[in-house]
Length: 456
Ligand SMILES: NC(=O)c1ccc[n+]([C@@H]2O[C@H](COP(=O)([O-])OP(=O)(O)OC[C@H]3O[C@@H](n4cnc5c(N)ncnc54)[C@H](O)[C@@H]3O)[C@@H](O)[C@H]2O)c1
Image 1 (cartoon, rainbow, N blue to C red):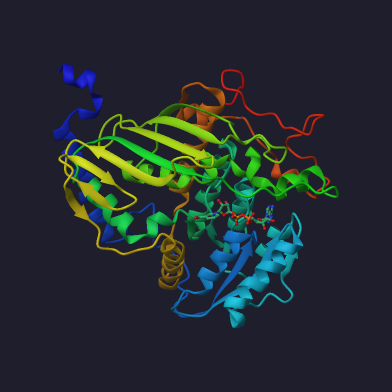
Image 2 (cartoon, rainbow, N blue to C red):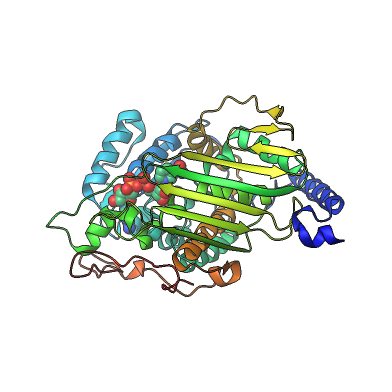
């Protein structure tokens, strides 16, 4: 009796075991028809491409957009062609064009379909592309995803899928239309496509370390590029070039990068946290080109009841500071052992290895595998849909940011229903449009202050 109150994580070990078996049983049953319904469905009337050519359009021609397009063109089972490219900046379109052509000379057919400007995305969607890759900064993703779905495109979109709660809701609403239309939607949370992650999560959900008690998730590293202001830039252009440092564009690094690790724990828990609290700030990220984002966040998330453990805590850290302890990894501790999920190793309570994945995958392999999985599914006439968990993992990160910026406990329902909008991207028609935030007289931007800033 008292155990129940003092240590809710140890609650009802038996009933968790039976709920776990029930969930596992159900997904086996589902697998016979449409595998894990929400993630992969055979849409009524979905076009099976078979070995036909699949045409691809790219929106956001930076580092990741270039990589994702090359990975799409690398897939087999039939021809894949890049038929359109769009970006707000001409230099980025041209360098991506050269980069992709360098790898796939005969698969790039964009001589007359390279678009530049804030409406370039719409022009890409007007082409006959079957699949569009959305790889801009996340602040534009909701607007672009909604338009892609309206245009009837299958979508591969990079994570995170939004930078604020309204954006997450817009993604979820557009995804309902995508499902009705039988469109595939994949999100660049590539760990879901890495064999050893899948194998490891499966074992943990099957109870290999008993009931789960707490998890740890890290993205601690040195940080990212700075793109300095040039005199000829308008304020909006400057923010869009140096996008990582503006919350409306990147969501802050807890959303932009740490989402990968938060998403792994959501995947393991088969749901999202119900609340969180945390702290963060800017120790070294204080230069003129460092915009407004923090350089560290530390958040304690709480999950609700789950078949895998009740009130499980996730301790999350992300840091962008040089010469510190670095780790990009996920871990979970249970009643019968501990697992380093990122290494796919399970340990017994005495520290002996109980299981280790044989898969010799390198991390980058997921970037390729997600495209193999998407294109082979389309060829079979299947429409995988990852938007919901992509949106919930994005919201998990945004909720953490709300907690660190505000210094208060944040509940999921309040966070996802937040009316605070960071930007109106639909209103941006040229670089002369007003930027969502403005610098002060010294050229500095307002930085959230815990206990003072209102963020939910
Ligand atoms: N899954 C992964 O492991 C992974 C890795 C890297 C990046 N990403 C994601 O990919 C996205 C892009 O990151 P990146 O590293 O390629 O950044 P990047 O700066 O190299 O590229 C972004 C591109 O988008 C363009 N762009 C900005 N706003 C646009 C708009 N409104 N319309 C059209 N184009 C626009 C920019 O000009 C730029 O060319 C981010 O969401 C990032 O998180 C994912």
